[in-house]
Amino acid sequence: MSNSFIEIERPGSLAAKTESEKKDSLDLLGQITSHKRPDLMTKADARAVKDVLLRLAKNRSKPAQTRGLSLDKLLDVKGVEVISARTANAYIGSMQTFFRWAVDNGYADENVLLACGLGSADLHTATMAKEA
Image (cartoon, rainbow, N blue to C red; front, side, top):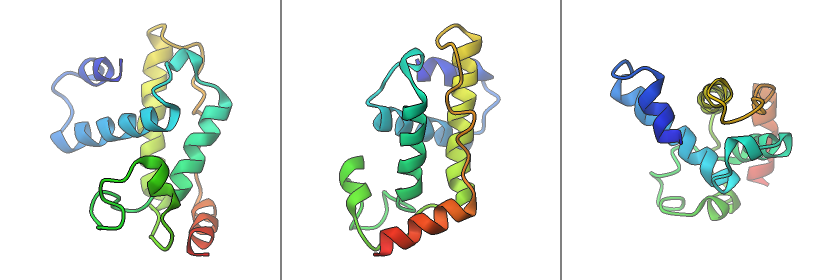
């Protein structure tokens, strides 16, 4: 369904980088929720998304210590820099757009990610915990 979203959203209007970023966001959403259908997503799932983003390693596919790890193992790696609030909110924005599309097209009843934004204080707290 996420592929349909990318193809339908605005065919041909997305720059290659933007399309890649949206696909990455939706892939991450699928990993976090075990590819749960949008109509089955709950606010607990939205909290899980936020929790993962608070602990997600910056450039997770580049450093040797995080490259190729499953999401569960990646989240357990200590001493890595986490993504910025801006990056986390970009992920959430793409995910919210997908849910808006899902609601508009009858795939879900509500956008459970609407209240799922992050501030820099959230990420600062997560960074401190990750370094401990």
